[in-house]
Length: 132
Image (cartoon, rainbow, N blue to C red):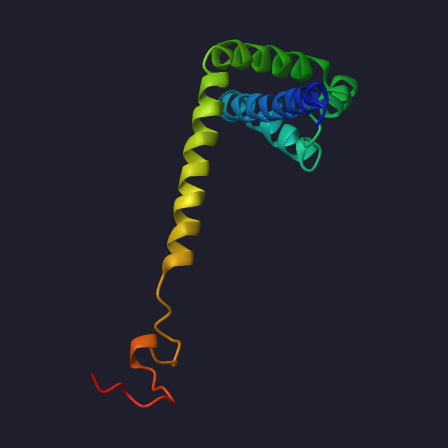
């Protein structure tokens, strides 16, 4: 397990997610102030936002002012959430793991009422009952 590579991949995924959140924020702002530009940005962004850095490169070529705005918003969001993120991620994973394990245990221990086989205490034995 290469923890350094995992950290790099996680950071890249988080950057792309923050780019997506910045896009949502800018689209909401533009929806109120400049609907035609919001429409253009929505159409431009469709299917391209998966890789945040590649998306921003493309947007910089088309509309540099929008790309710079998205980068500023993304940086602001990152600064705001960075303080809480490590603890929230660890806590969230712990709680999710507990929930998953609980659900798995419940599924494993559920009595299957659709099973027509009799319970062990109701099964007939080929041995005659003991006469004690």
